[in-house]
Image (cartoon, rainbow, N blue to C red):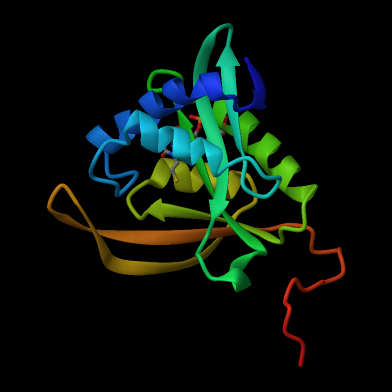
Length: 176
Ligand SMILES: CC(C)(COP(=O)(O)OP(=O)(O)OC[C@H]1O[C@@H](n2cnc3c(N)ncnc32)[C@H](O)[C@@H]1OP(=O)(O)O)[C@@H](O)C(=O)NCCC(=O)NCCS
């Protein structure tokens, strides 16, 4: 199994993996499967050092992916990215998720990002344990803020601070 940057030809396999979890689980609160065009647009938005995507592949098969996305839209959130990590069903617990996240965190450390935040459905205890093992720490919960399959859902945030030893710099055009 090897990890590399996601390429355009990986988008269909990435979307198959993601859409499985959309259709069958509350791990993502998305209701409608992502279309091929939406997946290509997602790929196009993940082409910067801060907002990027990696795949794990076994031979020709994409067996997992991980990405960093904007956490919220406002400019001031530039120091934080939200991570996603999804392993192809049937390929879990073989170290693929960890290898993807180690690559992703390594890539994030090469940028000016200062935090990665994982946003978890509160019942996703497997992912919680996985992220805690990677050094993420609990950073709060919001109760019953979601709806999937007609059920109320809660969300937990886990945070990994990175580049803490780097001096703070601002990207703001406004100084006081
Ligand atoms: C969560 C997920 C990404 C983990 O990837 P993985 O390849 O299965 O995990 P790894 O084999 O790399 O496991 C690394 C560590 O995480 C922990 N872990 C992983 N899955 C776990 C689970 N279901 N339950 C408990 N611990 C788990 C283990 O402690 C493991 O450490 P160990 O090998 O020392 O026991 C993967 O199972 C997955 O895609 N799950 C469904 C989608 C999902 O929940 N994504 C995260 C959304 S926030």
